[in-house]
Amino acid sequence: MHPDRLVVMRALATAVDDPETVGRTVMVGIDGVDGAGKTRFADDLAAVLRDTGRSVVRVSVDGFHRPAAERYRLGRHSPVGFFQDSYDYDALVSEVLAPLSPGGSRLIRTAVRDVTTDTASDAPAVAVPDDVVLVVDGIFLHRDELHGWWDTSVFLEVPFVETFRRMAVRDGCPPDPSDPTNARYVEGQRLYLRHRPQERATFIIDNSDPRRPVVHRPALSPRSPGRP
Image (cartoon, rainbow, N blue to C red):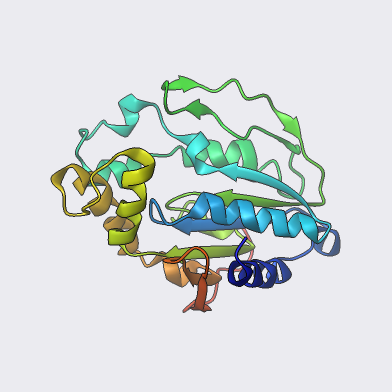
């Protein structure tokens, strides 16, 4: 890990509550547009948290896609469909977030669907102790259905010109955000950005250069207290 990145990760790890101190699971959300570097960021933060002696459970919202018939009910090119129908938030809550809340069963499933095969996941339920940090990465994590669950959250800011350059390498999509084949995803994420998810995040971080992420500021408005 680049030294500048490590400095940021260590600072974030310090800002995350210790589950043993607060007496419950601590939930961390890593948000940003597609290609912002959320998975790698979450993995690196999890590694640094583990280095501090904390136990970490990693989950990605990508394990909670809806079936294709639901994702594309408004058509395969619909930005509204991408924003509204991509993920099964009820399943994420019922299979992960609620079980890890105080009084929850502590039994979680880290995925419910394989998006590649569009089949239900056979991921087994696993028992999770109280004293863990849950780190979740994914797009749209500051939607109304989810933002109140996070004890600490990060919004990664990266311009579309950079995220699509990355995704062209990763996924083979056109590198130009204005290419018509990218419209579903660009416009769908702009719908999300109009809700100003940055204002719900604890930290806003410029991840345009993943080696040297820059913490821009804390949230522009306070987080909602407590959880749903």
